[in-house]
Image 1 (cartoon, rainbow, N blue to C red):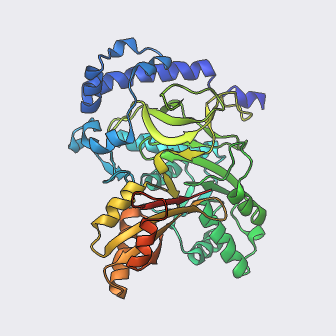
Image 2: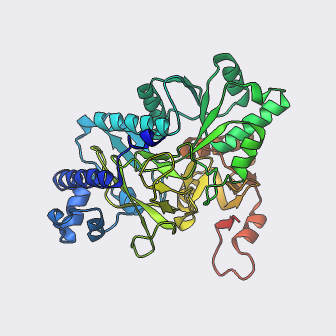
Length: 430
C-alpha cells in the first residue's frame, strides 16, 4: 500500500502544477477571451500580479447569468476550430452553449479516463452506458471517449427501458454500469418482478451520475441504501457540470469526489465570495485548466458542497468534494438534469398549448427532487396532450409529471390565503 501512495503527486507538486497552468490560462484569456478581456480592463486587473491560487481572490467571480447572457463572448476560438457543440439545460432562458475544440475533446476523454481509473476501472471491464449520447449532452460523449481511452468494452444502450437493459446485461455480461441512481432502483424492481437473480448477474459496480448516493458524512443516503440492500454492487459517486468539462469521482474509499488538479482549480466560496474552511459549506467555484474553446475563470456553479483536503486513504493527495448539499436560487436536480424555475416558466409561457400553469417541486420517498406541472391546457384533446409532453421532453431532456387542472383550481393555487402576489412556484422539498 505504501508503494502505491508514492505514485501520486504530493500536495506541493499539485500546487505547483496548478499555479503553472493558471499562468497559462490567464495569458490565454487576455489574448483570446472577449469576456475576460473586458473584465480585466474594467477592474484594473494586471494578470502579472496573479501568481498563486490565493491571488485568484483579486479577480471578480463570473456567474451563471454572465455566461448565459454573453455566451459568445466566452468563446476563445474561431468557429472553424470548434468540433463539438454541447449545451446545458439553461437557467434563466436559453441554454448555454459550450464550444469544444479537438484538444478539448481529448481533454474530456482524459478526464473520464482518469475518473474511471479512480473508480477502479480497467481495460478488463465492460461498461453498459445507461444514458443518452445525443442531444448535445456532454457527459455521454465524455463517458464514451474516456472508456475508449481506458480500453474497456462499451455497450451504448441509452437511458430507460429496464427490459432491454436486463436483456443486454444477460447477453453481453457487462461488469459495470453507468446510470442515474434512481434508474438503478427501477432495474432492481424489474428484476424482482421478473425473477432475475441479482446476485448472479455479471454487474459488480455502478458509476452513479446526476444524483447523490451519499449523505454529507459519506454514509449511504436512502437511495444508496436501497440499491445496495437489494443488489450487492459497488457504487461510485460522481459530480460534474457541463461548464467545468471535468468530473469529481470517488475512489474505493468513498470519501468524496477527487479533484483532477491538472484540469481544474476549485474554490468553495461563501455569500461574500470569501473562501470557506474545510468541512464548511460553500458554493463550488471553478477555474478550468487546459480548455481552449470556452475556458472559465472563477465561475460560480450554483452548487453548494464542502471540501476536504487531508490525504485520502487511497494515497491521493487531491482535494475532495462532498455530495451536493444545496442549490442556489431554487435549483432543481431532476433525474440527473439541472433545472431552474425561470427556465421552466419561459418554456411553459412559450407553448401555445398551455394557457396557465403552476410549477411544484417536492421530495420523493428517496429524497430526490420531483417536478409536478399543474397545467391549464388550451384544449383537452389527446393531440394537445401529446404536443405538450413531446415539447417538454425535447426541451428539458427529461419528462416531469403533468396534471391538468381547470381555471378555478389554478386560480386558487395562484392566490392562496395571505398571498399578495400570484404564486407560480411551490417548493415542498423537505
